[in-house]
Amino acid sequence: MDNIVDSLNKAYEKFVLASAGVLESKESAGGQKALLTDTALENFKEKWELFRVACDQAEEFVESVKQRIGSECLVDEATGLTTTAAGGQAPAAVTGAATSLPPISAVRLEQMSRAVRWLVLELQRGSGVAPGSVHSSSTGFDSRFSEDSTQ
Image 1 (cartoon, one colour):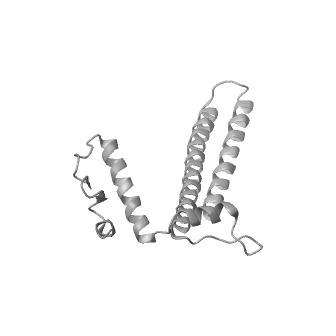
Image 2 (image 1 turned 180 degrees about the vertical axis):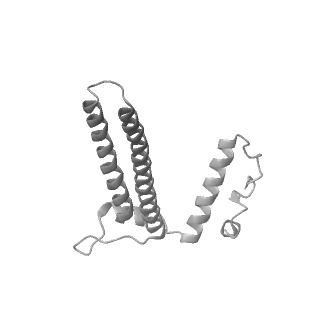
Image 3 (image 1 turned 30 degrees about the horizontal axis):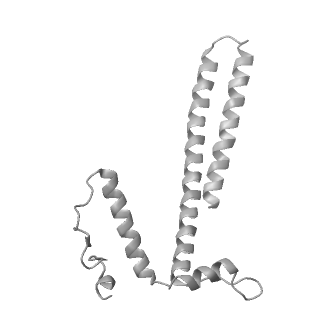
């Protein structure tokens, strides 16, 4: 994370210096178009693009961390591994959620997550799934998961 912050900071500093260079070159040219001004503008454009790339990379990193934290919380919630409050008691909302749903294994949760992602991709492609190819309507379970067939 420090590398991303440092990269963003350096790109910003270079961008600010390039903008100052444009202003200085315009002032020295008396407001008229000159080769020095054109060069400064090209440098400014390059530094602007590099700054945008650094911002995009930082944003991607933040999104990946948010996703990872969300996934970890989902796994903890689904498997019944909840954190306790400072007094040693679980918060009321977590306690209610933990008692109303039986915990599932992390492996099962991952399988279900993959199945959902696969279905989303199929739907996005527009191919859809033929009726009965994934779920058995007579048994009511997903044949791809061995745990369902034992129920």
